Amino acid sequence: QGDVLELAVSRSDETFKRSDEKRIAWDWVYLGTTVVEIRVPVVFRYHLRLSDPWQLASRGQVCVVRAPAIQPSLPPAIGTAKLEKRAESGWARFDKNDKLDELERSLTGILEQRATDPEHLQLVREACRKSVAEFVRNWLVREQQWRRDRFTSIIVVFPDEIAAGSDQELSRLQNEPTIQLKGP
Image (cartoon, rainbow, N blue to C red; front, top):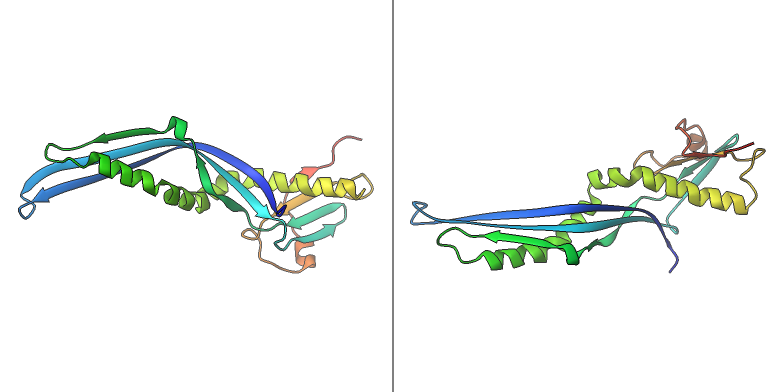
């Protein structure tokens, strides 16, 4: 509906591995271990919702922006053409295909959790910050506010980096500019 601003894309090869050991007779008889592994290229996309709250403040020629939270676009895209599977079973195990199917069915849920974990979000944070800054810069250009005598730099922060406060608190933020006006 035009409410999503895509900010960043992250591509990675993800590997999923599970093993299952079986024993019988009160754990005295070892039947073997089934090991399954899937390796697949994944594309994680991140966005923000334009309708979520934004906070803007100015400090001289600096436009300070507290953008909405970064969110993953779910589900992540799985590159099935390059999906690799591997399975092996112990001597008395015949369930490797079932275990492989079970792991494959769980991929989407696991990848959705990975997309939202702080480590993955940290990987794309600076790319997201630059995307928001470019979006705001384009808006300032349209409004004829991006020029030497008005705004010359933009600082972008996200809600998890600074608590919601007043415009005055935001304007006192001393972060390095995300982007600056270049040239004469």
